[in-house]
Image (cartoon, rainbow, N blue to C red; front, side, top):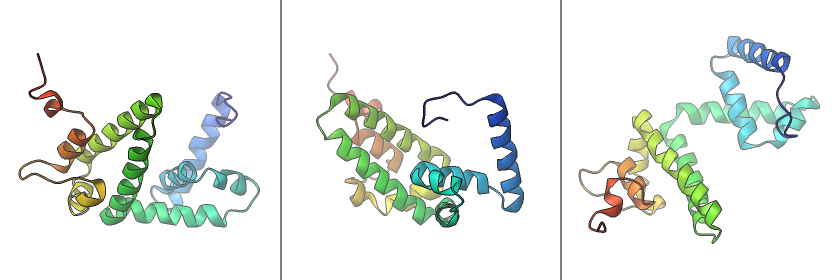
Length: 157
């Protein structure tokens, strides 16, 4: 429905919730992993609707692995960050602004995931960061995209 820009009806929402609850009875957080897999690879939705669920099952297992492994989450974070950095550099100001907002949200998310932050510290060069002593990876990422208090230090009138 969303792909066709149609509203999700109450009975559809209820059915989705019940299906998610049933899936989570089989394996905790399975619905979350499936949702993440579908967001990452939308073509799986059509395949699953046609009864071809192998791809969705494999993608769910991969999302489960990424969710539990800080190093895998770091790899995914770096991949997404680099893609957004390319969008920022692409020349389209509206897309660049949107990418910057998403990058800011990604940096902010590190407050809730200290294991990921630690794993990212080891991958700072892939994020084109030079970590300064005493500064968190989150603050370094925010500064790299011009977010935070350091942004206008010395530049104010």
